[in-house]
Length: 345
Image (cartoon, rainbow, N blue to C red; front, top):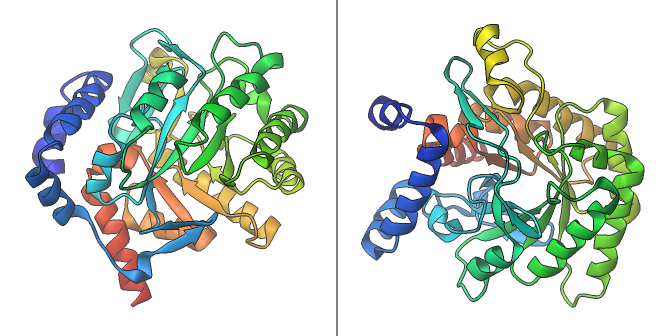
């Protein structure tokens, strides 16, 4: 039904407009307990074989929603009704910012992909805390943090530290986003020296906390193996809990969409099916280099249950979807969990 009727209608409109509309509708309609219960019964798969304990957290299943959908932590509880075990909110920056000029989100329908240059548009740390605090959470929530666009790279560590400190009592785990291609020079923070400075500061803050929140690093799919190896080394040196592989890509290789259209759309991070192979390669590389000791959340190009299984087979302990959720609909979460159960039965 989604792919035959709902998606064609949604795709008639600007993708960013549709995104905000869906968030608003979910927020509105899921206040009704009946709707809440019906949707949950349709999409949720519960079984002890799906449960995973990772980073000291117990996940009801291995499937989560990647950062970027619930930027301001408005609908994380409601999204649990679609069967997700965890939702990553953000990217959250210390100060609210509008992001890059519109239009900044584009569909590549032939490629089952998206190009975005959103630019960390969000309402900032204070607003995110307001949304998170005092709520009886029904789902594990990750906090994806980044620097403000106007913050110089040399001062980036202070932005990460501020959001880390402010969100510490309100999320279950953290993700250091140093790999989004839509913030000028952000990728420089994946350099060993720059990343070490951020990680050292955050782990130092964490040492003074009563509860140890897991910290993960989200990396780019465009990194060379040696660069990934350096990030693995930093993770080991500072006790980082895991890696998320991978973010969006600046690559445009192998796309079915006409080159003229791609060039007209301009810069931005590519997500969706074109990233599937590369993200799986990175997962496998990290797994092999660490003998599976460094947990990896696999994300990038998961459009089918088979794609998710492939990432789990490569060494991922959990998976996240985003573009697949848009193209395939909420039923994708259920399909993935049922496929896992079928294989483990």
